[in-house]
Structures are given as C-alpha cells and as structure tokens.
Length: 544
Image (cartoon, rainbow, N blue to C red; front, side, top):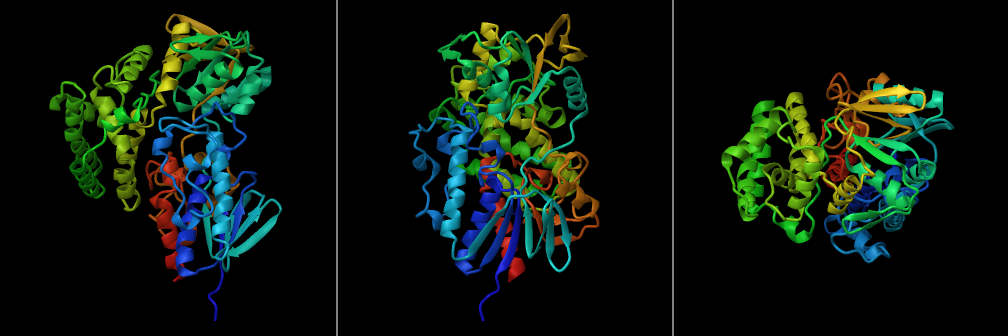
C-alpha cells in the first residue's frame, strides 16, 4: 500500500516561502514522502516576492555583498541551478552589492529548479488569489475571493510584510495628499517612484526615514534622473529635485559596512569567542531580562577589546562596558555626533582610515554573530519579557549591524556637501501640513516640501496588519501576539500558539510577523536558514 499524498498550502511565496519548500523537499526526497502543494500568491515572480521582483529598478540594491550571500541551493537541486554568483550573467566581484532585481530573477529561476528537482515528490499548483481566511474542519481550509480550497494537512503563512494600518502621522499625511493633490509615495517599487520623480525638477522633496531604503531613494532621485557620481563629486543632470530633505526621529545615519573583505575580516570573532558567545546565549535564554542582556553583553567585551587593539585603537574595558551599559538601558544615546560628522567618521572607520569606535566594533561583531543568535533564540521557548528584551537589543544594534554599502554612505555625504541633500530638518522636525506641501521645521529653519517619500518599513506589529487572512485568524483565536507591538506567538517550528496556549498543529507562520517568538528575521540568510528546516522537521514529525 503506497504512502498517502500529503496536502500543503503556502500563503505568500517570496524568498521565505521558497526556502521553506526547499527545506521540505530535502526531507521529502530522503523519505519518499509525496506532497500536493498549493501556493496562494498573485505575483508573477514566485520565489522573488515584491521586494526582489525582477522588474524592480536596478538602482535598488541588496544590503549584502556577493561574497557573503550564503544562500546556495541544497545539494538535491545542484543539477538544476547553480549558486547565484555562478548563475548570474553579471560577473560580480566579491565586494559588489547586486541589484535586488537580479537576485529576484535568480530566486524565480530557483523556484522552477525546485519544481523540477522535486518532481517525484512535489506536485505544485499556483493559485493566483489572495487567501482571505483559514478554517479548521476535517483539515485546514482556505477561503479566497474566488472560492474555497482544501482540506490541507498543513498550512504555512510566509507573508513577508503584508499591508498594515497607516501610523497616525502617515494617515494624516495620506488624507492631506489626497485632498490637495500632492505626491506622497512609498520608497518601493522604485520604478513607480522614478516615474513620479521626473515631475519633481523644481520641487523640494522630503524623505521620511534615514535608513537603508533612503539610500535606494537617493540613487533613484540622482543617478536615476541622469546624474553621475565621480569620485567625491556629483555631476547634476538638471532633472533632479531642487533639494532633498531626509529626516528621522533621531537624525542618525546607519554606519556603513567595512569597505572590503580584508577589512571586514578584521572583525571576525575567533573560535573561542564564538563558543563563549554561544554559551552566553544558552544561559541568557533562561534568565530574567536584565540578567540576560548582561550575560550577552559580557560575552562581547573581550572580542571588542581584541579587535580595537588589532585595529590600532586604544582598547579600554571601562569604555566598552560603559557603551554596552548605555545600549542596554537607552540605546543610541551614547552616539552624540551630528549627522554629517557621524557619517564622515563611520566612513573613515569602514575604510580603516581611523581606528573603529567601541560602537562600530560591537556592531560588526553583532553582525557576525547573527546565525548564533538566531540558533539560540529561535530554537528555544523564552519567557516573554526576556524575549522582548533581547529582540529590543538586536533592533537597536541594527544601526551598525545592518549598515549600508560604503559607496551608499559616501554618495550621501557627497550629496550633502554638494547641497542637493540638506540636513536642515534631519533630526525629528516639526511638520506642518499646508495646502501645497509639508513644512519641515527644526529650530529656526523651515522648508516647504512639495513631495514626500515614505522610506520607513512598517514594524511587524501584528495588531496593525490589515491583511484579511491575519485579521480573521486573530478574530478566530488562531493567532496570539507575543506582546503589544510585536508579532505572533509561535513554537520553534513555526506552529502558531492560540491565546489560550494551545499549539495549533498544522498551522504555521514564518518570518517577521512572528518577531518576538523569533529574532533577526530581516535577512535573506534567515529565509533559507535553520527556521525553515525546523518547520520542515515539524511537518515530517506530524506525518510520522
């Protein structure tokens, strides 16, 4: 008697959905388990998702260089598709940051390679409809706007960043823009933003946010309009906005990554430091919040002192411990430089022109330890307050650990020196809405922006999500939040936990919408990492 075919629904199919099915394929091919899989996604580039769509503007680039883009396909797919660096028609150098679109084309091709490689165990159908509701009755059923599907043995949601409620500020601005016919656009898709930017030649344009997306926006508003960067100067095309005003809550730009592989290697922890950090994490996940953060931070002190010394700095245990103490209690307040000075100094650190600061070194070490952090945190079940404390520390460290390419920071500094980018309102300005735009006021300075770009990624606050499949699942008590402002409660394999503590077998959620149950989700490496293999193992265990 042959083994029955298992049924699986995947809701949302970007990189994380692809990573999940690859992990499942590895297990299924080893066991000979067969699956009928329905993918619910309306996009035409399965595997890429909207953030890496092959049609995105090539000026929107990845935040990780090719040399550390460690997402090679599993061995069972090696005959169907090569790793990205070999597959791409572009001859990338190790320190290159590829366009998102190029990676998206690869991920789309990789999905087709998966279907080919797993053809004996996977029968995959793409249902081009949005899942609107999930119900349990003799298996899981999914309702879309054109019908009902199921029953399924398993459902996994890998939605990435679904639509959310507008925050109060953006809600008011949206109404204001609609009333007065003003341009208010998101940073992505970049193709839409660039189309609108051709009408902004004589306008002042404001950008809400000073993070990674802002660098993509700046390239679109300069190089995208015909301008050129040449060394430390910018050659205008004449089609750029009159002035660009970026701003954020603290006016702090993220620090760039080290400029080259050789400089980046200076921040590598040695084996004993990595083992010490792993031991600290193992201890921390079982401690109270304050003790957990102290345990983690104590493991960062020795590698920080060693690296500062190796980079010709003056290591001081007192300064390192003080920096970490402030970071635990009031993150970012120890960074007191103004925006331009901070940008200039961290660029010099990234080039190793000057010794790195305590914060810069700790941030790079933290970036190197992301896999260890995810492994310890995501595979454990933590007390809620401890989980929130560790997630908060990680989020604060992103200003160093998720920094942009050095070229992006240098281009921003060039545009500031040129005067095209103004920092007059960079630090949490007051903003007044007027009939012809938004007036940004900081101190005695006030400038009127006729167009506004939102470059702030919505937080993974589950209660702000407006996607019906999530809101209705919450109404049916299929999803509970970790804590207000965070994501869903899940088990290490992604299984959702209901408000009464029941583990919902066969209903899973992966990715940033479960922040608080998991950590450091905003990474391609996480999409193809251990979390997807834990999910696949969970699926296998429920079928055994």
